[in-house]
Every structure is written in structure tokens, then in C-alpha cells.
Image 1 (cartoon, rainbow, N blue to C red):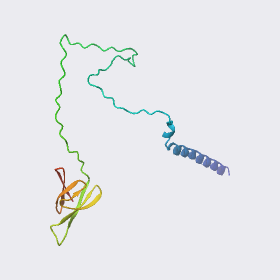
Image 2: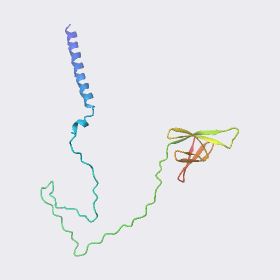
Image 3: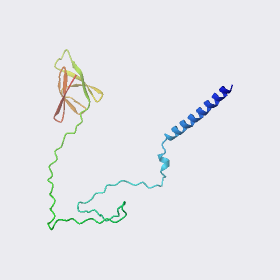
Image 4: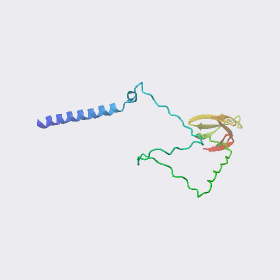
Length: 164
């Protein structure tokens, strides 16, 4: 009888402890962000600071570690004038074709028995099935050639061949 009472008390204690842990865990998962900021709290906006090339750094601040003022050391040139900076020659920027080709799968050829010259291709582009013929566009890609084992697609003079 003593063992049954002890087992019941232990079981009740375990259920209460795990219940408390679960309550704290689920309560901690809620979003409390709205409660952290009061409505009248000012929010700082980020801004971009552009520094003019003629601006200089002010190096007369207190060193946070030594707690003393820093004085920049003078530049020693040995009586010679400082060399002038070399001006960088800007090269013209050539536009690069940054087209990311979509995922293309060529599934096969569909040919009409009565018109063997009219070929259709079953193409999956980005997970969507399309039935296209030569000269048609599918998602900004032009179909230029259809064959039994491959289809040829072009985007801005960049050609790719996709096979079965």
C-alpha cells in the first residue's frame, strides 16, 4: 500500500513539474516585441553618411584604453615634398548578362502524324509544364530548335541546349 501511495505522489509531482516546464516553454514562444516598445518611444531611422573626399579625420579624441589625448605624429619626409597621388583611370563598365537561367527539363517531342513538320516540345520551366513549338517564347526564353532528343532555347543571344 505504501508503494502505491508513493508512486501516486511521485507521478503527480512529475506531471506538475512537466506541466510547469511546458507552460514556460509555450509562453516563451509568443512574440513579446510589441510589449517591449512603448508607443511614444522614438525610433531612430538609419541614414547614410556620405564623406566628401576633401574632409579629414579628426584624430584629437581621447584614447578609450589609455584615457589620454592622442596627438598624431608628424609625417617625416626628409625635406622632400610629398608625392602626389596617382589618379586612377576609370575603365568603361561593360554590361554583363546576369540572367539566371531557370530550371528547364525537356520531356519529349510531340509530332502530328498528318503534319510531320509541325513539331511540339513538352518543356518544364521552373516547375510549370509548357507545350511549345519552334519560334514561341516561354518565360522570356525563345525556342529556336526542337529535336527528338533535345530542345534549344535562347535568351539575349545566349543559347542553351537541353536534352532528355
